[in-house]
Length: 598
Image 1 (cartoon, rainbow, N blue to C red):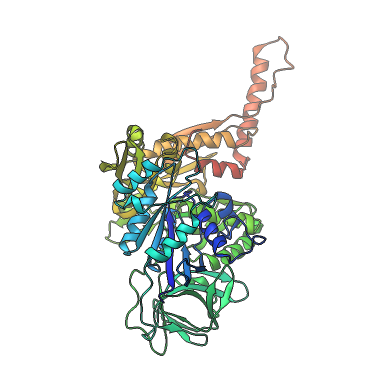
Image 2 (image 1 turned 135 degrees about the horizontal axis):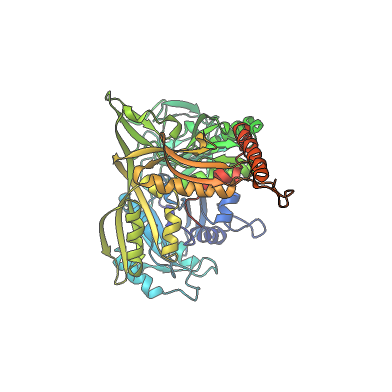
């Protein structure tokens, strides 16, 4: 056990976490140069393209240290985005130490702080690593000052690294061995192992990633998951070295995987505890909670006959993504589809992209929504996330919406612009503090519904990319909620309905009407696009009709003849409007999701 080190790499998005993992893997020689590829731990195309880690991975690195001993370094990779912060916390709970990477040109950002606090909660030993020192814009002294003032860590212990160029990698490996503690635990105690991830293998079922804290596990043992008390017989256990390597036994302190014929990843919950059925542990490891979706949207196929393909695709995707929840949904305008719950907007984008790419589907998504709590006049409570389920407003006593505590780190010259953005989004400024002479942390409480649209993009725009943002959900608060409907040619289109704050309804309706006017093709009759709350019209836009010049053949002559022809045309258009159907293109549904007026 003294020769094992379990560690994680944590960082803000795009600070070089995956690149450093690549260099560590290359330095320990578990992959040949011929088989190596960049972002080797990121298995999905989307992860490689966007440069983000969505699914955490694990790899065991054998390392011969300068003291002559052979060590096994278990790297537990973590996702970098705030949507997956629960997965990050479970991965950190499996480690004794962490490398905290800071970009030499960007410095400390919001998630650097958030991840540091997460690591401190788990009492991890932290090694600061300043990455990208080869960049012309690198300012190492400024970053060292931030490490001391913002993070409260000793800047003299910071390692200077360029993961891209391979500078300082040996120092990192030596520091992991020397500074990070060896794991503890009794191999003879009842088994306690923490699940920090799982993925689905089409041939073997679910492969569960775990860290053993107490006891040992062997092939053939009957294991039990303590959250749902389901038991399975383990068929194979082993360690990861980019591919699965079976072992006879995994004992306290080690990280590995188990295959036990588990049909779906839903049965294996991240943060759950594995124990043996015959000699179970007395209590599970702390910190387990159900991952709850916070953003909801409906997904429909563009062609109605692709519904069956969509159903199969979502079912297959669910095998690999336990945090995705879905149920059948139906819309008058769009036909059959699914109402899905996501961990956040990035999760929604990833699911949409994977469905379109991996299963070759064309999809329409409705406007993202959050969960609202309605208290009815008869005292009952109702949780809704779908505008279609919004009840008659006269039966509602009170509406509540979820609020978040947002931590925003910006250079102080952008303070006014960020303040205006947050106050425009109904934010409450709780406090702000200077971390250094020109950087400050601003704490706001904001409604989640105001953040899920384009808050992150706007923040990046107004701060020229320097602003960073991290949040946590705090509670539900009273709000004045209304259901905004969109009527096209006097017909309500349910897929375009949104639940909005009453102050925002007119602005949101006008924007939606304008966007739809640009997208809906012209017909032989006028099309009225209206935004409404109940029976009250609050916004309107009109798609003008194509018009044939019926008076062209009247050169000169009496005005009554021209009028007669125009009246005849008017009657025809009126009759056409009554029977005419307006086809709404897919781009029109997507345009409403973009709240910006650009």
